[in-house]
Amino acid sequence: MKLRQLVETAQEYGKIKSDFDLFLLEQFGKADKDGSGIISFKEALELLKTLNIAYDQKEVVQIFNVS
Image: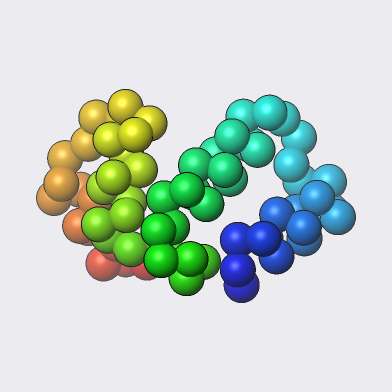
């Protein structure tokens, strides 16, 4: 599912309830540099930096391995 479709579906079901939700969706869209609709590991690391979120790279690797 592409990000645009996700936003449209979420809006239809009323799941986007705040400006923060919209902000996060926008940030994920910006992080998806190749437009695949999926955030790669490299894109996720860049997103964390952009959002100024401290992270342990090993933890991020574990999360990606589970997904």
